[in-house]
Length: 323
Image (cartoon, rainbow, N blue to C red; front, top):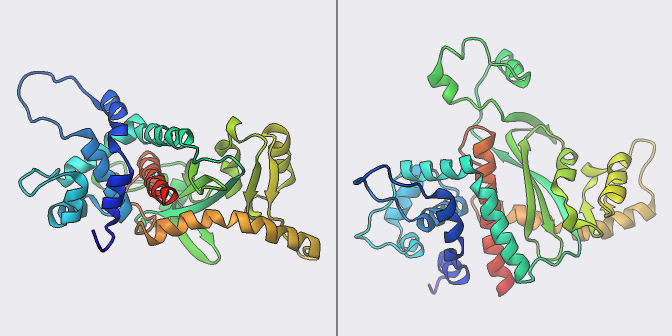
């Protein structure tokens, strides 16, 4: 405690019983008969997933670290005499959340609570996207072309064990000469509080601006929207001004033979001071949460894992705002 255990602060600052009603309502299954082992407490399992995302652990490492670390046990309310859910149980619980779309509901529930507390200020929104990488696939060029075209590579159908380990929905992309493979976390945050108020997940090849309109809702109307030059475009800005009634504060981009004027550079500088606040979110994920790398296959699981990542960030951001 004297060394500043972040999990102790999280336990004291967040009442996880707040999530119990939703978890029990959506996850409870009537037993088919008498007997059988009683299910682990749903709030306990949810806290395990928060632990997993905060430290970016695999399922096996999650089980091991809970058994090994007293700080984990204290956070979960377990003693040395208690049973610890094994890695398969952790995997199965997360799968159920993904199948039911429950991560999105948990995120929305906590966001509503943050709204009630007045922590979401609504004085502007910032949007940006970050790569979320997954284990890289070692496919041939022909196989990758088939996957990109929405087809199953020849011979894979006869190898179900191989197919089970192949991600057919992740994509490759290049940025500043570096290759990335996986998905994108398109994020909308409150400019004042730096709380994440919305997100969308696409494969890594989708341009940042493609998910912008999906992120914005009626609650954002009339606010300023800050973004970097990746979101520049007259057609897109017209939709924001007319359709969403937002004040566009997107950094302008210079072009060959048409560089930015001194006035545009000053305007960009002012916009960037606000827009840069979204980088604090990604910095927290990379530095405090062990990075945004996920160990899953397929879009549905990626959405669940990335949603848990964003929810975990909001939990810790809530503690920071309370200080």
